[in-house]
Image (cartoon, helix red, strand yellow):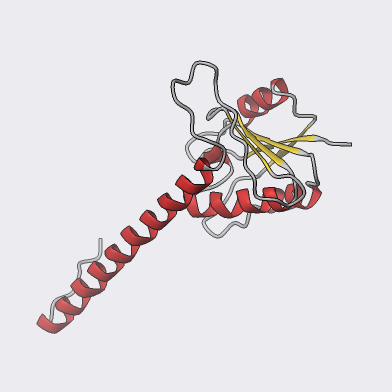
Length: 163
């Protein structure tokens, strides 16, 4: 029998766990899994347990996509895993539902009735891939620039001041 699981991750600046949980219960979540406070090297152990429990037809409900992932790249891989499991992701803030049937990567995007223009079924994943490529290009450029500046400082014998 398909189940609906809510996933809550606290925000950085405030613990909005109760409001997220209430929203997910209102949206039909039968169980709520709450991630603890995360550190920089945290691995989201509760999310891993939720993913292990997901099976075909199950729905993972989140208050918003930023509660699920920190970066577009992480989101892309999490969506891929959800689809491989044949589960459904429902994000309430974005009014987005992505379905994966029997491991097939065939997203279905549900839109608000008031949305003026809605992308077709595969465009969300395609656009997310474009954003990931953009993010990587920006990071690569920043890395090259930073390394070049450090080399230049070494050549002229100066160093960056520490605060």
